[in-house]
Amino acid sequence: MQMRVASGTLFGRKSLTLIEAGEPDAEPWHFLAFEDVEAREIVPLDGRYLLATGWRAWHNVDPIAVFDLVERRRVFELRDRWVLPHMWCWSPARAALFFVQHEKGHGYCILRERSLDGSVDRQHRLAESFHTRELIARADGTIACVENRTEAQRIAILDPVTGEVRLISLPHPPRQMFELPETGLRWLSPDGRWALRNHLDTLPRARGRGGLLARFLRSAPSDEGRHPDLSDGTRRFGIALDLIPLDPAEQQRTIVLRYLSLADLQGLPNFGEVLDALASGDAPLLPLRENLEQTIEDKLLLHLLRKLNGVAWDADSKGFRAFFGDQQRHVTIDGEIGPLEPHAGVRKPEALPTLSADDAHKAGKPILRERSSQRIALPDLSGPAIAAALDEMRQRMETQGPEALSFAGVLAFRFKTGGKSIGEKALFQAVRDLPAGEQTALLPALRALLTSYGRAAGSPSWLSSGSSDTAPGALAEAALALAELDENAFLYLREWMASLDQEHDQIGSEKLFPIIAQRTRFATPEALCFGLWFFLQQWQTVSYEKRWLGLFAAAPGVIEPAPFARMALEESRVVVAASEGASRLDSCLVNLRERMPGDFWGKAATRELERLFGEAIATEADSG
Image 1: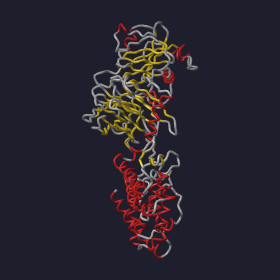
Image 2: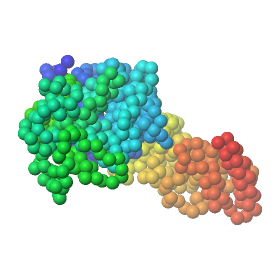
Image 3: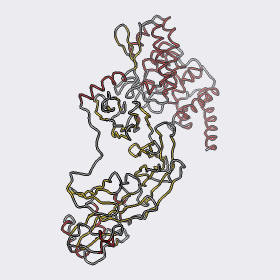
Image 4: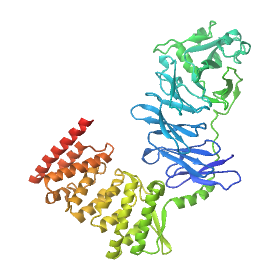
């Protein structure tokens, strides 16, 4: 099936990539690669599927997405900070993608397999400390991975069906070459049967035609072993590649890509006499000494290596083109050397056609309008109508989830009422203007909305309520309204406040907590418990009144020292469990001790805090 695919850029607060796809005679399908970043790579996998990768979305995660161009849907979107989206391969045999995934503490040792039908999403461990540099899928369904290391050269062949890994270890180059990127295996063939590496063990040299070269290129028939660069008796040095087999049935070969005379090496200064001496004799390969000194031979070899600009394999993997400056030549894996030819540059993968700015804007405008906000019909601004709208917001949250409802990291609602469209700020101002009875009647719907969002969004969610850099968290206007109108709002705001991005959003500390403190005075155990939790879970923002708006001053009139200490320990455990290492029990104890009053109650509470926390910390240490 022939699919037409093109891409363009939509410019706005954030530049986004619009993709146009479809059969030539059909109405095209327009969609966004990602809703928060541009795509950096768009690759057709076959006639049906398309892969896109992005660069640094929210929270520094590189997104990956796959699209079904036939069914016109997003197959999946993967956002995992441990996955390296620039290192992947597509396996037609497995109908799956394989990504290199970082295993914390062990290096890049894992391959993540994700099938397009959703049946497989698993990890394969290659070997301890195996750092993958390049990977490719083979026709038999196995995956070949080349290691990115200097002290060893290994290849891993993974069978995804059985999980078995076959490791191939290769002789490593001389030690003095370790610091060079040219020493590693590069340029896997499309069929995954071969890899190339700059030849470093010996320095190829020759003088004219003859059987000498045929003996060196053992893979070529002796009657065809004549290199086109050796048409006369000039002394020459060779640029060679090692052809490394990934299957044991084949033998490693060395192919001299090009021979250069002393005249071709004018860029190597002050070595004329030495080079002339090296060119004498009959041995085609000059061994390199394995020591840490950069010898004459080393310097010559490095100079030769830099003449090779790149390699591009043929699609059938039977040969490749080698590039030298503005020249190229074709080489087969059997060692047949083609003539030097001019070229304009190293061949690059063919890029997708580009949509014009006008075409991209025309096709993308309705998508942006539809996705930029959730729209809800609102017959009027009465209490029952607003309560129904809040219920609709909650139902969408519970059935689709906050991420699906958001666009470019923003979760925003707009309400069409009285022939105009209003935003969340105007809606909740209308709630504040309602008679007290109608306000009370819609509070259950408002509580349920914020509770549902907090549970679904996670901690933190990084979703904001607007596109500006200073916009507070999603549903901030709803949270402010509940805090102002409901004396028990703290019972329903804990999960919403935990979803805030503390590093950039201080609405919790600057607005919500002061409102709750003023309404409750922390005069009940429930309000005091909430205050302790909020105090303990603040690890990033610091704009608070030193005495915490009366939280610790109110505690002696509400609860005895021992139950206070137990309450503080339980809330500390909740905070530590949710903080992913940002908080610990001992740091919670330090923060609490700093706030204790200096009176009899405060001293008693401090002693009990130290006892309970000490026992808890010791127990955790014993359990590892």
